[in-house]
Image (cartoon, rainbow, N blue to C red; front, top):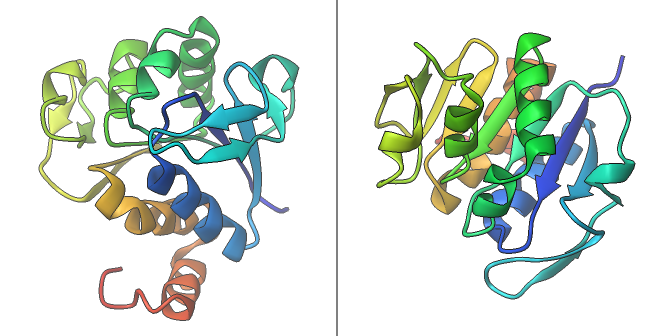
Length: 183
């Protein structure tokens, strides 16, 4: 059965951290639904606008992974009770929870990082709850993947592909985009 990831965007999201994983996932034939926190028109931190497939309030589908990009917009996600509930519920259902840059702080607030290894953008380590901070580019522990920032966005996307579709598919995409040395 085809895997399905949702990517939740709020105004101020970091464009590389959203678009690179979306692109990598779609190259692996994983269905991606882009969800806007408030509306379908979402503007990134570098003034690049994206059109989401639907606002969060309209989403009621089944999915295998929730992906949260960082950037200044992570604060909007962090303050959303719907996002926190979705993250907590996804974690409890053993669905993949993936966040990059400052967005792992949302996982910290949701309380899903307790005793799990995690990473984040420098300066957000104290917002990871009871996580075991690891200074690596991408960290996977159980059903959680975290990553450092925009420069790790492709690796982050490939780690999500590896989790959802397997190493062979991640290697295939990695080779196709000439990223073979990093993954």
